[in-house]
Picture 1 (cartoon, rainbow, N blue to C red):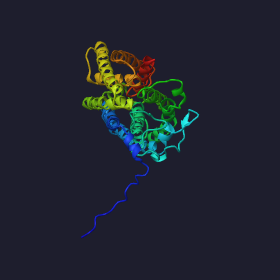
Picture 2 (cartoon, rainbow, N blue to C red; picture 1 turned 30 degrees about the horizontal axis):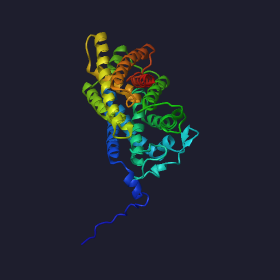
Picture 3 (tube, helix red, strand yellow; picture 1 turned 180 degrees about the vertical axis):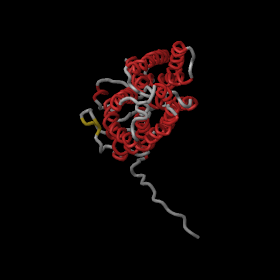
Picture 4 (cartoon, rainbow, N blue to C red; picture 1 turned 180 degrees about the horizontal axis):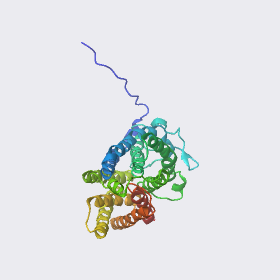
Length: 361
């Protein structure tokens, strides 16, 4: 009889028993779930954006969102994680050799420098994977601003350079304990500044550079801005809302009371922003709309992100209300200035992150 194939066993020496015993199973389980939830947000974003676009642009924008999951994962593993969380070089950037190809991050190696220490210990490799899901969705957010105007090769070059020169340094400044903004006391619970402000204002800058879309007539322009599939918008919103529990809740890096605050506050802020946005739209147009309600809920989630684990539920309601009012107004500002931000990324994500960060104090 044929012998079954044999495979080399993984060397257990890098994983001392003491380190494996130090891993908190509850926290590790929650972080694994959170990583999956945040990764799910990128397909949710693709569906959300696809529903908002004209039918001729759906495949292009969904491809851009999905391909971010491939390219950014590889960039993050090779150099991005080290630039963000590696040993700090003057509080500006991480040493790119610190965790090259996730070297030194093993399944039973507890989180050490520069990540959390304490009773809620989880594997450093899990932290790197969780942060990778954040890095994936952030450049995908920007695609909604310059839709229909950027070729796929140009998009790949853009998100590569943007990740390495904008996202990773900003992540290092705020979330690495040795980053200069972290040392100044800047707080960003789950990425209101690192993700939403950076993506939103980068979206605005990209719109200025690429210029507006060109149409033969006003009627063609209006047709291009009508969402082609409201069902996709609602489905994408549901996936984003669900995934945001891992986005904000996982950023507590433990399964404890702070996690509960983050999850409940996220839900309350989103609900408040949805009601507020729908009310404003209803009063201005004479009827409520499903798309407006969905956009409002996403605005609430973006606005509460920097403060999710730091505030009481009543404050989350206030933050959701303020975020909806400010972001709705900023869409009018974009139109008045003739900035062709197709899916209002700056108004909803950029200004949402700004409002939440300011209200956090």
